[in-house]
Every structure is written in C-alpha cells, then in structure tokens.
Length: 435
Image (cartoon, rainbow, N blue to C red; front, side, top):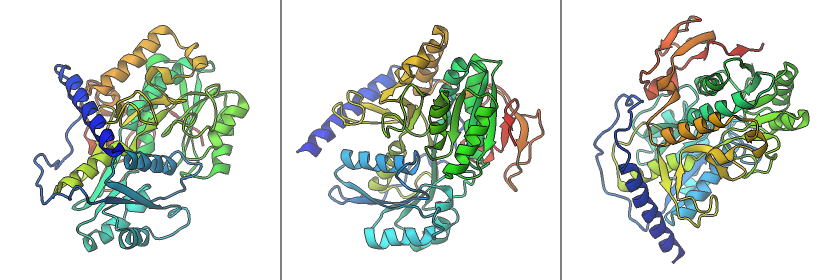
C-alpha cells in the first residue's frame, strides 16, 4: 500500500514538473548533442512490472567516510525507497585493495543476478567492463568517467554536470575570501578535475577579479595523510577558503582546525555525514547519482535495445519524489546536482555566517544563475571562453597538449559532452599550480 501511494505521489510530482517546464518559453540551447546520440529508441520486450531489477556496484573505494562511494550507497537506498521493483548490492574497496574489477562484476552477476553493473571509479570500468561485456549481452555495464570515454554496445558511460554547481560555489568562494587566496587539494591530474577547477575558477573570477586560485595535487583520490599535508600547504600560502577534489575528511578537518572556510563537494557533508558544521562549511553541493541511474533503469525496464552510451545530466534534469520523502521533506523535484548544505538547498544552502559576508548583488546573482541552469538556459562553459594555462597534458589520439594562452573555446559557443568529458586536458589560464 505504501508503495502504491508513493507511486501516485511521484506521478503527480512529474505532472507538476512538466507543467512548470512547459511555461518556460524559448530556452537557450547551450550544449552540443553527443556524437552518435540515439534519437529514436528501439524497444524490445519490456521487463515485467513484477520483476526486480538489480544493480550491482563495483566500488573503487569504501562507503564509510567517503563523499563518493558513500553517496553512491545513499543514491541506491533512495531508489530502493522510491521503487518496489528495485534492489542493489555492492562490493567495496575493489581498487584500493588491488582486486580485479572484472571478477567483482562477474560475481555480482552470478550471485546477485545483477542486471546493471556500475563502476564507481573509472578504473572499475575501464578496461574491465569492455573485456567482459560480450559475455553478458543482457547486462548493462555503466562506468563512471575520469578522462577515458571509451564505450559501446552494453558498455555505457556517465557523469553528472557537477561543474554547474561548482561554478555557483565559485561565486560564493570569491565573495567570502578576505586574503583573495583560495585553494584546492586535487586528487589525480585528469579531465574530471581540470573541468571541475575550471568551473569553480570562472565563478570566483566573475565576482572577484583579484582572487587567485591555487591548486596542489594529492595524486590519488583517497589518501588522508597526503590530503592533510596538501591542505596544510595551501593554508600556509595564505588560502582562507579551501576545497578538495579528493574523497576523505582530511581537508575539511584542516579547515576546521585552522578556522578558515571550507567549500564541500559531491555530498552535503554537514547534513548527510555530520563531518563539520556551517561555521566551517560555507556551502556544498550534492550529486544525486540516483537521477542518472533512474535514466538507465527506466530505459532498461522499458526494453530499450540501443541505450545512450554517453550520458551527462545536469541541473535541468531531475526525478520526482513525494513531498513526504525522508531526505528533503517538502521538495518534490530532485535535480541531478544542486547546492546543498545542512539539508538546505539553493541559496539557503549558504552558511548563515558566510552569507553575511556576501554582498546582496552577489546573492541575487547566485540565485539567478542557479535558476537559469535549472531550466537549461545558461551554462558557464557556453558563456565564457576557455583559455589554456600553465598545465596541459596530451591525451594521445584524443586531445593535443595546449599552449599557454591558447583560446581553446571562444565565448558563447557550445561544447560537446565528448569535449567536456574526454578532451578538457588543460588548466585554465590564471590558476596557479603549486608544486
């Protein structure tokens, strides 16, 4: 009975969302269509309504103490709450323990009857999923993207437009810094991280042309001691706002100890994990992986024969949920990414103490840009030119090394998902790399 009521509530929310979207006239198209996108879906026999669909997760890291794999589990739990026909299982620590992702995937298929297998880190999917996909033609293998976008057939790739929320975070960071020095502890050098820091930097410079963004590499996604060391080095440079593109709690702990502002990523680290408070966390954003997986689940359940092989969803895509949901009560729309801090969303996600430091015109700008991106009317990578800076790495056969000062993309021109996910191989001009 509860599942039936929940389904009715979700359906009602979907209708409301469609009506709201319909009244927005003439949205700007700012993103190029992915190459080879399937426009008309070929549908085979759909999965019977009563049949469970199982997702199996090959987790690169651990669910505890991580904004990445931990948020994957939260996403799966939410889908299980929403859909009586969905269930999931996971194998964690696969990459960190040096185990074979292909063996993990095979085990999830054999023992848990997984219909869709998801790799949380790129090394979980590439090349493992490519080597075994033909052995399981009825299983969809979904791989997260770091830099490599190889795919095809039943090997599908995905990533959210986190950069849209990171641009908004940049607006906040640029407004609250007092030293005009902002730092990022970055994991590996890869397209994912160059794209992220670029969007953050564009937001910073829009509101504070005098601010400098300093980047120092940790070298891997999860290494708490090194993450701490790198964060302390950035503080020693004078950074009074810190963020991280790694997965442990070490950077926020440094920010708390040093009494500086922290900008969170991937998850609401205050409201979901209780790792800190809004006295330290100025703002964060939440990645709703469940929105992307909902896309794949619906296609799989409908019997789509040729699914999208490259899926990159942003703030203008959402799932509907009942108002009595236990995560964000009263909210019926869950966008793929959004500002979220201490279980508050949008402009309200900015820490009260941080908000007091932000001029009113900047607060209005943050709210306006968020609304525009929610309706697909604006995007930082459409709006601004992208000029290569001091760091660029050749990706053989994909993207050449960029020359400092090279305008890779002019302002107000569209970029493809392939470019954003696989060819963004440079740091923006103006970002300072700390050796």
